[in-house]
Each structure stands twice: as structure tokens, then as C-alpha cells.
Length: 493
Image 1 (cartoon, helix red, strand yellow):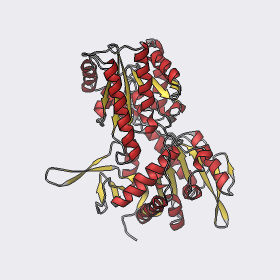
Image 2 (tube, rainbow, N blue to C red):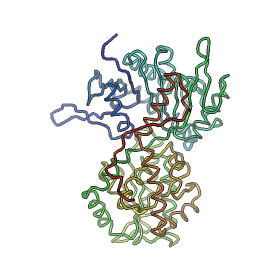
Image 3 (cartoon, rainbow, N blue to C red):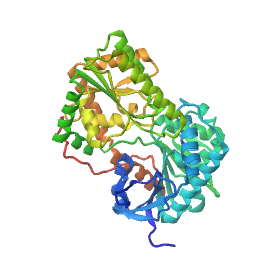
Image 4 (tube, helix red, strand yellow):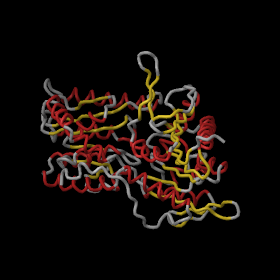
């Protein structure tokens, strides 16, 4: 066996680094900006960890390499793999199914067969990278078969799985032709993490319906040789690097940029903001419909209120997403055409992503944040907005009750995005909310986001895995200690 195997291996669809090619044709790698990478980077470095994932482009043919103390193990995907495993089964079968069939899922056997084959490729790479008795943490819905594959080949491993998206109720999940295989794949893990308590409950109910295994609360008893193995299926809500986002929002250049954004928009009395991937689960169409009706009703004035909608490109090779982009852009154009003036337009629509500094400035510039997801595992944008406003404790978060963040951010203005009348009333209420009420609500949300940041999330999950490995009760109360960035602790008190 090789000498460079690791005691901690993370397996995810994408690597924690992004590949770019400079003007001379030389490839370079930079750390991805995602919260998962931020959470795991310190522990990966200290453990000499390895990260298994796809490089983001077809047929790269890359060998393993080191990046900032983490061993990077690229998985090669062909164009056919991407079409069938990623765009097909992952994002046109599982994604719509797990998001309550907001769009109809497609079921194709060739997609499933490729999903199995690619999951095997990821599992084999993790098996080769893992030292004896190592911990392997598998991430998300693209790799739900990997835990069982690992268990069958390497029973010495401690295996975790985290599902970053919702897990649907059984009446929806049961539509999947390969429903039992997915459940069996997940039960290869020792700990299965979900965003919400309801998601974990949906999973254990699916286990009871599909398999002759007993469940007690969040524990599933799985046959293992002559005995049984206890699997923990529990909510571990993910979060953000709160301290870093607070510091970013307090930088003078970011605050000046926020003031410039308001000036560039014509200094309206109120700015509303939506920040989403261009995805049908995000409720962008509902948001636009509500705002358009407020303008038509005279309850919002184009010279008084502006909506900034950031919609970063997403899965543009999938037909459903191309249709959504066309529909959103037509709606924005119609509203701006109907209600815009020479000096003001109701909606500033931006179909591209922005760096973190610009996002922090947008959060600071906005009086109301609109998160109208129809179904969302968590929605970290809501938490970023709260962290960015920790300095002034201002701003109002209008948050869908169908986003996982609603379980934690209870003092947001909670809405049902399907109820357009209620959504309109909530938007007007947010625009007119007195300052003291805004501060009271934001103070409570800030406390929650600071106490439960992304470091706390990763430490709590890894502690549950450690307890499982040592035969301890993973549900027993424990004091999880994580490093806190306290440089902004005094802000906004």
C-alpha cells in the first residue's frame, strides 16, 4: 500500500480548488470560495487530509497533487459522464425530486447506470487514499452510493455522509425507480447528516417503508454480519464563516462601495436585494410577480424602491434552466418596460456572479433581503446577509419558511412564497418596518449565526463520527470547542 494515505478523506463532486489557465497556457489552482472548503480546510491541513473530487472540466487526465497542505485527488469525467451522471441523474432526476418535484424529474436507466459507475470511481479513489481506520466524509446527493461501496471494501473505515439539499417526504421519494438502492447506499455510513430535522425524519421513514430495519429516533439498526450496526441519521445544519464575513463587511472599502451602489441606483429610499443561482427552486419568478403587482397596485413606487436581482448562471446546458432564464429575463424586461422612467428602473438584473467583497457591499447597501425559495436545503445567502449587517444591526430579512435557514432565523419575516398576496404584504411590511424592530430582529439572528457558524458545523459532525468510531453514544451531550474569530465580537453590541 502507498505511504501517502490519509487519516481523513473528503469525497465531493467538485474539488476544493478551481483550475484556471493563464495567458501562457499554464494551469493554476486557487481555493474555491465555498463554505464547505472554508470549514474543512484547517482540519484537513492538520490531519494531512486528502480530497477526492472532479476538476470541473471533462477529460483533464490529472494526477494527484498537493495544494496548501491538502492532497488533491482528481476524478476524471468524460463528456458522457457529465451528461449522464451530473447533468442527467444528479441534476435532472435527483435535484427536482428532492426539491418536492417543483420541476418534473426525468428517469432514464442509462443515467442511473452511469451514476452507479461514477460513484464507483469516486469510491475506489477514496479507498486507495484512506489509511487503515481512516475517516471518510462523503458530501451530497451526487455520491449517495459511495458510503456502501466504501463499507463493503473497507469495513475498517469510519464513514460520514452529509446531504446538502433537502430529503423529500416518502410520497415523493417513492417515485424514484432506484429508491431502495439509494437508501442502502446511504446506510453504508456511520453518520448521515441532513440540513433539517424534517429531512432526517423523511429519511428514517423511507428506511422503514423500504427495508426491514428498525429505527428508534435518529438511530437506524442495520444488519452487519452476525450483529447490527447503529447508524445515526440527524440534522447538522450547515452555516457560514461568520467572523470572516463580519470583518469583510466592516472594511472601509466595502462600506464605501456599498454607498457607491446606492448612488449608482439613483439613491432610492429603499433597496431590495435577491441573490440566487438561476434555479427554479429559488422562487425568483414568485418574487418578480409580487414586486410587479406592488408596482401595479401603487403600493411601491419606482422612484422610491429598487429591486436588485443577482442571478448567477447555473446548469445552462440543462433545458429546464435555459427556459427559466428566458422566462425571468422576459419578466424583468416587461416590468422595467411597464414601470420604468428615464431616471429609474424598478429592477436591476445581473446575470453573473460576484466576488465576496462585492456581495458584502450589496448586502450593506440593501434595506430588505428577499429569500423566497420554494424549497432549499439551507440557503446560506440569508446567513451571509445577517453576518454582513452585524455592524449596524439594520436591514430586514424576508425568508421563505421552506428554506432550511428558517429553522434557525426565526425572527426573520417568514413567508410562504406561493402566497403572492401574503408575500406582497410582507414586502411592504419589511419596507416600512420601524428601526427598533429591525434591530431587535437582526440582533437575535446575529446571535444565532455567530454561535452556529461553519466551524461549529464541521466540528459537531466530526465529533459524532469520532464517538461512533470509539463506540460511544453519538447523541450524548458534548462540549464541542471550536476556534472563534473574535476580532469583531464587540461590533453591534
